[in-house]
Image (cartoon, rainbow, N blue to C red; front, side, top):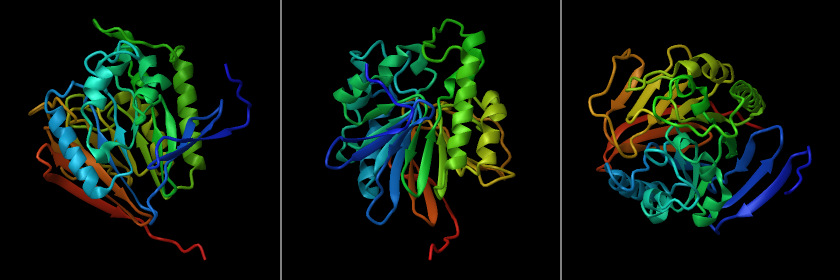
Amino acid sequence: MAAFSKKPMLLCVTFTAILSLCFVLSLAEFQRFVQPTKADGSLSFLVVGDWGRRGGYNQSQVAHQMGIIGDKLDIDFVISTGDNFYDDGLTGVDDPAFDESFSNIYTAPSLQRQWYTVLGNHDYRGDVLAQLSPILRKLDRRWLCLRSFVVDAEIVEFFFVDTTPFSDKYFTNPEDDVYDWRGVLPRDQYLSDLLKELDLALKESTAKWKIVVGHHTIRSAGNHGNTVELVAQLLPILQANNVDFYINGHDHCLEHISSPDSALQFLTSGGGSKAWKGDIHWWNPREMKFYYDGQGFMSVQITQAGVDIAFYGISGRVLHKWGTNKQLYSTI
């Protein structure tokens, strides 16, 4: 087993000529990855969640449109917001579901980019260590799944958060489901460390834009609604550190909710396969910018000056667009 020093160690891994990925490992911090931008300093990517159904429930159709839009936008990577393999995660690193729900579905040339992936609650019902295993990265070089980590893309930093262990019901009332909590217990210490590390990473960030990604909702009008544990424990950290976007899945819909008291935007991209038609609760229309109870995905384009998001249905039609800008300051 390799020994790690207390000082961060910089490693650089080249997956293909297209992607150069560098990361810093530290015993005390989230793993950090460096994602190159385009030559002009901009970045574009897709977001999809709640997808792993071996092509069923329109997963293949969503993947097809992702390939088309990904090509048009010349995307740099893809973000998965979790629930990667239904219904009960993977049984191991040799589970054929990895190919049947991922490698053999997202086959478009534009989707042969790095996939930054978080775990969802359904992933915790299987062999959770399998999804985290470097063996899967050898099977498909695009795959990168960790519990919590940071991606530095110069103008923007992404903070990926493992949200499933926050939810009390998975521990107190799991019903017939069995969760793989290896690496999480003792839970209180795990969550305390995660929140401290996230807060520190956000405070130290000098990026123009800050985006936090997790599986569970913070604000949502969908079936699951607000995740009260995240509202109580995670949201204050996001607000205190001027996070621009929280991106999640969990609710099987596409959704955009604004904050009444900050610039923070809540974006749900959980329409990667099975959707929940008609399952919506009332929300203040001044905050609810968009809600769609069908399948689809999201795109994000980022520059120093602005961010543009768009949601797409399975036909590729744009369902919702929104943008925001920040003032540029000269460094001279």
